[in-house]
Image 1 (cartoon, helix red, strand yellow):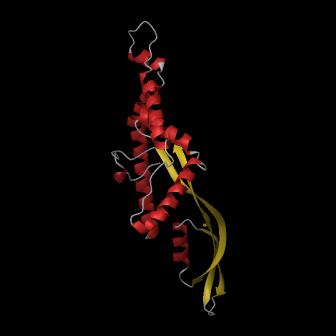
Image 2 (cartoon, rainbow, N blue to C red):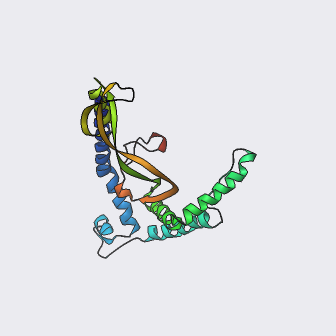
Length: 227
């Protein structure tokens, strides 16, 4: 049953992803391209738009406005000692909030070279009307192999559950005994195990050409997935 549910969910998700890709191709990408051409004052764009003109024409007002507003926004974000604000919910949390404030400032400014990434994010948001910054934690995995004693008669159910959870079956089983001397089948499995989760945060700019979202997802609260 778990396998059937997994297949059904996978089919539904893949279908939604495909619809989102088509929506981006037909509806989003053309508008993104036009906004980018306006920002760069693309002469070919204006030549196609105003075909009766007998001379080259390009409007640089969008680029000028974006550059000016980007500088103003960046001054507001990085113009003080604190990039953001962290406050404790109660008075006794104030000291911890100050430590977290300093930690966030350091994480953004130094390991993540935050000024450059914020600059790109603000600038793209102004001329494309949206932009995406992904914040993650670095995780390290290792491949692990182990032998699991499975009670007799439950081998198939165990292997089905393993495959449904992306666990590879290396050896379908050899006869053996558990710690109590009961007969079992020793099944060798292989999987990826999380060994380290770094405390540092990682900021990454995702170019909008690589982003697809579900149709009608105009607010974060209804954003089912974003790829």
